[in-house]
Image (tube, rainbow, N blue to C red; front, side):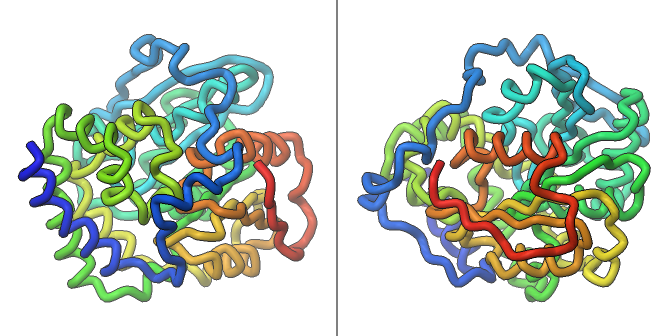
Length: 342
């Protein structure tokens, strides 16, 4: 087992170096001991108390099967959660139970990821936006709060542009769509093919990786600021989504579509949440999103990496609550807010 893990370790590091436009650098393993108590603290209600099999559903979207979670009820507007590259609906485990108390929450596996089939046509950011809208149509959701991380943030913003009638407000968490379009496509795609090795690993190998802090750090330090502070069972739910068939085409879509000139068309109030130590998408991108989206607010979280909804779920949930309640967003673009406490 250990030899197989060593064989896949180098490609991941190479991939991080290849398509990382950020100047942030990884925190060394011993730095995790200095992280504040809010980093990696499980949100309430605990996601482990939910039997997720009861909420797993299938839909046929544009002729292909899409897996999604449908959980929660209440008077609040529906919330749609969109995961990022190499992700799955489990990227929202720390957020779904909290918001399901007052809202119907939908979290899908995008086509080509998780358990969803590859789409009939080549993956594209616009195609993903149309597929998310089609799923919302099937579920009769009406206007929604749309939340996306990384590539999912790119898709959420595209949904705001292509289907403005669908979106009541939006949250972009470390969203792609700005600097990634400037990257060289060939080395990025080569690295993406290499990274598929982890997806071929068995469940036992994934568990072996996440159960050992040093291995966990080696494989995930370019996504999480302090991997050892993330619970092993939560980390397992994240890494087992790697290496799915949509990876290469989705990364090609990320680097070949530029929508910056259309961002001012977004009318929905938009919350932009970033980690100050994001190694994949630089904080400068947050400022650019805020500059271009008329009704937007940026919050930068200290000592946080690329997945703030998993690294600081309690803070993230509070900020999203404020957006839903109409607090903090709605004025013209203003100065960013730096959040230093969990």
